[in-house]
Length: 249
Image 1 (cartoon, helix red, strand yellow):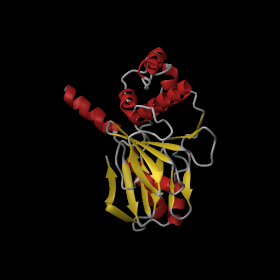
Image 2 (cartoon, one colour):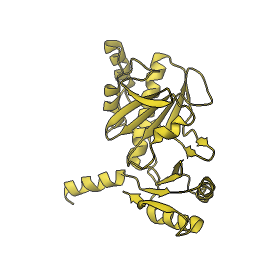
Image 3 (cartoon, one colour):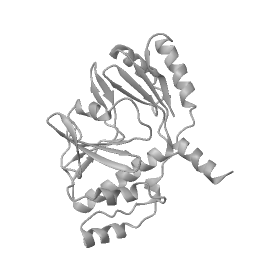
């Protein structure tokens, strides 16, 4: 097989399918959500009548999420920062919003709302995830997309992009980003500690490959399964699709 063709196939496999539906009432969304109880890997986001159904995360999505978490936790441990892992913290505002980030943390003390939520975006959808997290007042949102790591702080009920985290003002995001999609899971922690001492910035080594291992996503044939399941719940005329009932691949 041509190497360029193989690379293109791998790149396409990294993307995630999205079905976007409009004019979905909260009650109808609840019925749809219940119908997906047996497919926990499928992710649902709802905001102001718009519903996104996202296929199980790709292998690259899970690798980036896991690596970013390992790097951030290594940094906090090295700096002596107390943290609480909240994971896929469920966010819900009855009648208006629902979803869960890829990861989340409370810093210094455990709280009802996480201080930081992290979202790895492989395929853009119609819902701005920041609007979702704003509903419960998440102080800081990290968006990792297209080899970029962007941080947004909540001020006066709006998110504003900032160059550094309010919780980790000396964390060098550019240096952190270099390691997020590193091709191997073996980099000595010794390198991380030496770099911290030398330049007072982060240079994190990935930990044990056992901790880094990510199970490959199930091959669910997602678009057809999702549509079949949706058809049984909402019927063919029960929703207004967006441009039209789009499946982004």
